Amino acid sequence: MEINFCGRRALVTGAGKVGIGRETAKALRKTGAEVVALSRSYEDLESLARECPGVQTICVDLADWSATEKALSSIGPVDILVNNAAVAILQPFLAVTEEAFDRSFAVNVKAVLHVSQIVVHQMIERGVPGAIVNVSSQASQCALLDHSVYCSTKGALDMVTKVMALELGPKKIRVNSVNPTVVMTEMGRVGWSDPQKSKPMLNRIPLGRFAEVEDVVHSILFLLSDKSSMITGSCLPVDGGFLAC
Ligand code: NDP
Image 1 (cartoon, protein in one colour):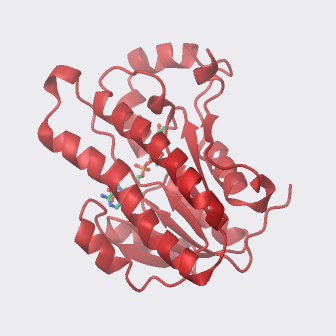
Image 2 (image 1 turned 45 degrees about the horizontal axis):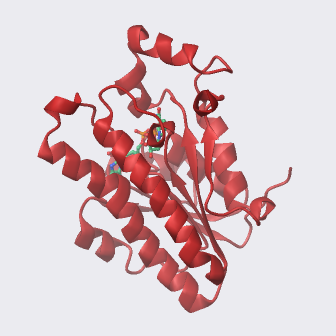
């Protein structure tokens, strides 16, 4: 399946660390898109720009509403948006702190809404179609130990995805999410590097393995591309069958 993003301009959030966002930015560039990569740590963005010449970068903490507004004020036209940045702060339910709750919702939900508003306003002004993929998780639909806040943010994100699809469909802007199982990135290792946790999780995945970054990137590219032109409002599991059981 040939996917080509020539002539499109993409914004990918959370594209700093070696993970889903960074690899999505690189794949979009490889398939012809102009790419703007946004993340929180300057050094990560510098190394991405070295690795992938031509990628523009924006360094901002998405938890800061006004700094985000300022950083994106002159971003220019965007046809494709990947809301990937997130935090996973794991705490047992009875130990959840206000700080962890607020930061998680600020990055994983509020910033998705805000960045999307900024991008969609200019899509509508320009009268162009658009495609947005929000990076959710299997955790949006299944309870996981110590994940009460993370699961809640991803559950909320799935509903943001669906309501955006409902309201933006008439403007020819499609909005979907991918919902991966565990991926052994920096974030994945925090929750799942202990075999006592990873083994029972693996046993619940019919395909018997965690997802690779590229499994998720391929699904994101499909949902961004015209190959999925009739798909909007969907939350696509990339989970080896975990959510089916
Ligand atoms: P990584 O940890 O590799 O990357 C997350 C990126 O988001 C980092 O570059 C990080 O920058 C950035 N980021 C975090 N907070 C902010 C912020 N406030 N402002 C700007 N950038 C920020 O993550 P993954 O590739 O593992 O995860 C990507 C997405 O996939 C997330 O939405 C995650 O919830 C989801 N997911 C991950 C799974 C996994 O097992 N890994 C499973 C299911 C879903 P910095 O490091 O500088 O903070």
